[in-house]
Image (cartoon, rainbow, N blue to C red):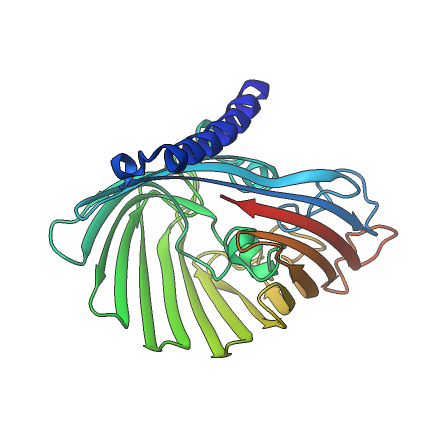
Length: 360
């Protein structure tokens, strides 16, 4: 582990040096199909939940660790792209990989490792390790806020397999996925999962995305249960200063009703967020979200039911330069009244986080 930390940070320094050297010495022409990028997000956080240990903190990957300076993510990415061939290899380290990649013990420090080719124009076939196609949120640099919504926490974060994508026009594209499973690199059973992504932009100010994932996610030795996850995303930019994002998840799984496994069960989540940009450097964001998994299909059981919660987050951002940000956020999380899992038998908690991110 300590050796790998050294490798990650050495790679960060080397990538910065290589990019600078290439620019200063005019060899960029030889590397025109290769790009090296680095990204670091650090934070300091505080919350009023003084519960001991991680077991009581079901939102570990969406809440930074309390009262400490930490690293959300430090990554180095190498990409190759030409008319016919492309590939990505990304190493990462930090709290986000530690929690979300934890089940993938052999590949914990690999974020992406894939290669693809284009047999005909607009058609790509890629295989390897990928970040999931599910969800409206990704790493903090892509999001309005550095924290994750409740539904994003319970969505898959990674996947491995083969995908075939095709751009039908500037407005519509589609991608089909054949995967080892949900939130898996190495398969846990003899079945494969399938996914679909459809992107439609009727106008430059609106993008609609539909994602799904279908498959048996139970490990070998357990009764098979087909799970279907539907994910619908609306991204709207009504004017230059305003960005809006809404996402809805609806999942179903057979043989999963608590107390009666002869019946199927479902879960759902919704989030709505907006950002207002006062200037290119200053903006504020607001997000409200809700998640309900009463049969504990993808969440844990607390007081005889799965997680039910809602939250409200407000944040402000300052961008000293285009590829860096400083964010201050406050979030309030409220669990179901029966799920008093926080400090002093409380069903709610408050958080404040200061984060700094830089990409080069």
